[in-house]
Length: 170
Image (tube, rainbow, N blue to C red; front, side, top):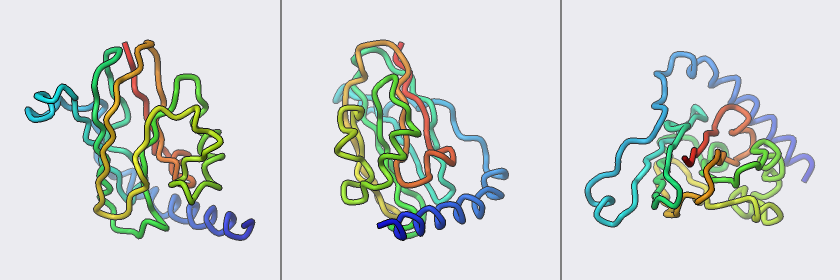
């Protein structure tokens, strides 16, 4: 177990260092989600499309919502690396949760897509862990309490390298 953790950590560090030069040249990510397509609007949910890739960045790092608003997050893994090396998920946490502490606990939760059962009370909603070219969607209502709700990719070392954002309810 310990050697597996060390190997995973080492691989993640190599990927972070290897991807850092690419990230500097990458175009700036949009700061908020676009309006929903007509089909989603007819169903009452606003769709937020978020791309994830081998650069360990979300294309959307800030989502603004009104209290109780119906939302659907569609996570698209645009990467090419295998799921075991570069899987991505989207985990929305309750306000006040330390996202990096959550991700440290998630390192040992491979069997549950890096969403640890012991931390379930801190999770509002999450996608499954995606491999390359996969998509997953989650529908939920924004919290009714105004505030900032962090979201992360809980795959080891991804949030630490910047794969995180915030849902702002106001």
